[in-house]
Image (cartoon, rainbow, N blue to C red):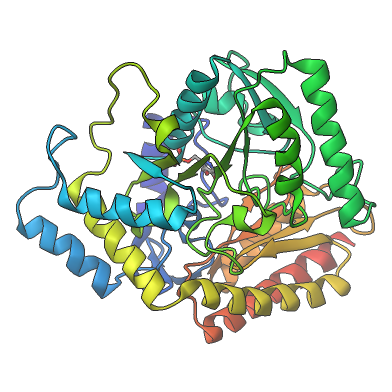
Length: 435
Ligand SMILES: Cc1ncc(COP(=O)(O)O)c(C=O)c1O
């Protein structure tokens, strides 16, 4: 680590909260970026397979995004507030309402995934006059009071106090589920039976909503069988329980096969939330819901910076770019290359317990070789080895033992192969050390 890095790290530790953890034994400062490559404060150039936690959806220095932002800067206004009409805000809302697949949809803009999910909880609990919520085990939905409560991961459970009454159901995380050895169809049946049981035994029946991540992000890209949420929705419908899909990580074609993660489940959501990659790295969040639900609040509400002109310029340019370059199909293609490469590696390395995911959302669950014991140590070692090899990857999972791969959707084939090579070396070294 250079003196410059040491100094910054010391200053960081002195002034930032302890619970806001940094990656790496010697934390990295990002100084600049181009394409899918980042230059660190250590002077090294890294291939980026984590994209600012899946938020830099198009990579770095994208001329179309820069031009859109610069045009708005040149207009002299980066903020107006929601007290005035916003042309870009209305245009973007019209387009994503249509894309959402939710009939008669309206859009409310905020600035993060947490706020989007808080808004979804507000809408659904208000509509149902109930504070009861269903969420999935191993979920992550945000850091504020209600979103922490619906997060089913002890590692992120910063408080047990809660404005909502939450019941957690099975389904998202199959690798460590009691139903793991069942066929897809039987797994779905078991989860549906569990849902029914949880509603009957832990709620008063008039539950407001169930919220799901189609692929669990922080939970280690845990990927349930297709069709699970459609089957669960049939039970929800018996009780009038609303269905919320948290697309903060799975949206915008990242899963490859669909534009939204929920579309693998033969279900139409009542509410959809998004954030992270929507605006090419600018802070954004939003909730899309049927008009009747959205308009149901009986008092004023607003988000001062929600839908601000600078973010909207970036969001429209990002959406245009994604659609014009069919990044969804691209994610499907490169995701398949990465998945099959990693599955081949897993055949020869017993430190790899599971390789899973969809499109450019791939998780590698690491275990004590030859067992299913989670190995956070192996994950920490792989993270460091990848960095040594020039590749940035993410980490997650309930036990901190899952390597997460979520590169910009503009990743090239050559970069996919390069990253796979670095991962292969890193996983091989860690496997050799631990067996
Ligand atoms: C699925 C999901 N929902 C919500 C959030 C919260 O988003 P934010 O950190 O922007 O508040 C995250 C963040 O990782 C997420 O992965």
